[in-house]
Length: 360
Image 1 (cartoon, rainbow, N blue to C red):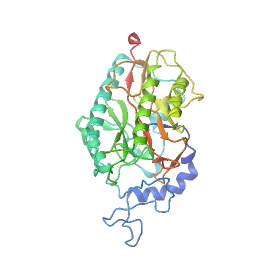
Image 2 (tube, rainbow, N blue to C red; image 1 turned 30 degrees about the vertical axis):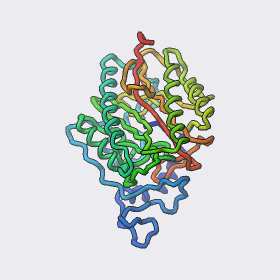
Image 3 (cartoon, helix red, strand yellow; image 1 turned 90 degrees about the horizontal axis):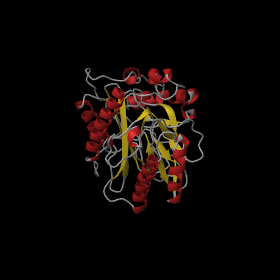
């Protein structure tokens, strides 16, 4: 789950206009039987008048909030993040560290990062094994939620800034932060599953994009290019490397393949906090501040998906790449789902890595 660079879309005025709508989404009313946005099975599109950019539509009502056993430790936002009046509010723990430099991890903390990331990989792989035409994203959410609590972990997205589910599922033109609902996966879709676990006081975050059955060649190429871009960016990570140089690696690969790098969302720090310093843009000519230091944790894609090495600080690399030349996005009225402006597909990969200085 990535960090939104610009928050202008959820400013006070905008949130004020959407609070009632969001409340209705959280507790849907019985829709009118003659509403053209209602399906025969009783599901419905709550944003019927919204101008969608592609063919993807939300399929409501959302299932009830899933229960997390009381014995499972949880982050500070797990309870108060649910309140409608506090939607999009930065968790107290994150706001207190705002503006501070990246955290330096002790050896004990590094081991905790390793553990939670291994657990997150297990959960993602299990969820991915269920990707097929006909399964709903809500069913994928249930799988992620159940597998997470089986590991005595908390699903980090749940109630984070009011997010209503335990995983993000982003289909086709959805770039990120898709809310799991009753929409069934269809042959030819691509889906990004973004899993984050909170275990023993630390978050572990990773995602991958998967084909659903047989996929169009251009869409398969998009997925391949996105993985390649992240792989190549990871190769330049070493003590002293500049955060802003990651975009110099990622964007040329995307552009050479007829794709565009999303600029609105970026990589970020992760440890006891879900999102924190540093900010790591994925496009070229960005003005990110800071250098990588020995012992820093970074997030990116590896063949094994395991946490193998360490930096002493923590940051993420998680490019979102759109097919075509338009990097901009549009948010649905749920204020979470970000989609491409032209309805073309988008892909993303991420993982959490440790780079041990002796191995560089």
